Length: 264
Length: 223
Image (cartoon, rainbow over all chains, first blue to last red; front, side, top):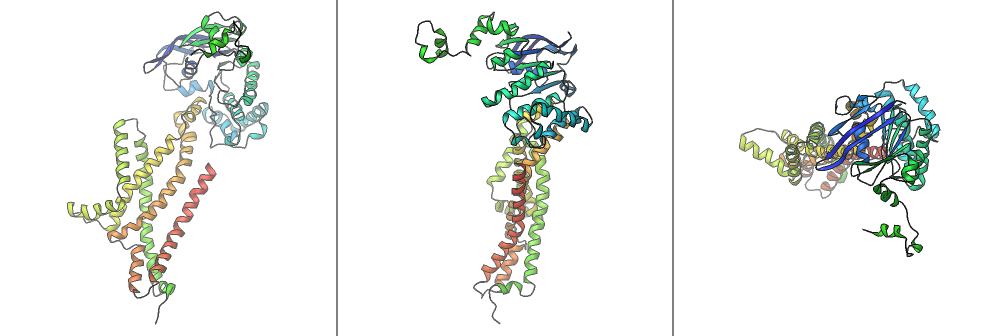
């Protein structure tokens, strides 16, 4: 299988804060890489470096064997191949849904409008928003906006899709409608790098999980290993932070997960 | 013959004189608005500059202009500069200078506010779909800036129109001054000031209200 993305020993600091230290990973076509880790571990920065929203300080990033890092001039050409969806629902508020979708393919790629429109309608229908093409984003719920944002990114026919905590700002009941779309894309063979706090989703969607802490790759494993038999202590501790011991049984001896929860 | 109330307005060419005065007001206001909006765009971009010095200077200008009563500025230019530098500025020119000095600063601050109120994610998500920096500006940033800016710029225009009433104080015969001339013509008539000033009020209202309503409509439409 072809390797699409290679990240080689990249480092990134903001002022004196070293956010990424010697991070390396590679991604084959059609695979899904999930990046997890505590807040501030550098997950989002990693994604932002990959599509050039941040410049890396050291190392290099290659897309299909070509170095894409370190250049500033033709970043837009690189970004046409790397789709990205953010945490905030970042549709363009002054455009209707359909115009949001057409902007990239028509203006950036120069594709014929009618062709893209037909494709956009198909994809909107696929994510359950066939009737929303003509409305403004402010009339949509957060979950609906994120689905439109996914469609907008997909219409660029990117080689890779980067998802940066796309459900973190959503109300809980809207999370699954968005994640189901992502699962659907993964089944279709879309290559993706996903940063998420939804561990069950991570387990379901990932081909491989990378655990990042303090800007370093601490563990890299297939999901069935990472989530059930993590190899590193730090990963174990991180995963335990998602477990809650029932309050009424916490007084029993040996319920040390509860103690960990309340420890400062 | 006994004159009464509203009739004095239509005596002779009084009403035409009022309209003539109103035109002087409007002429000053329109030139000022045109200059202020254009220069304010540039000034706003300076206020957004990455250079601290430029930002500092522009900030200082804005503060000074805001603290200074426009009438004091008018006197300073019309009476002060004339004597000091021997300039022979007429009232209208002085007024345009002073109001533009003020309007540019206010417009600049509106531009600054409109641009910086656009969340950074708007630029990033536009970049993420592969648009060039020019396309990002043209299709995403500028349209949103204009939508935020235009209603406020229109409101600023009505403020400028109202403020031009001050030029009466530097001997420009605008609508208020004409009004006073008409009143003194009928100084024996008790109701004269009321009717004249009411008329002037209505004239200002007829001009400013539609503009203000337009701003409100745009604001609602683009909310």
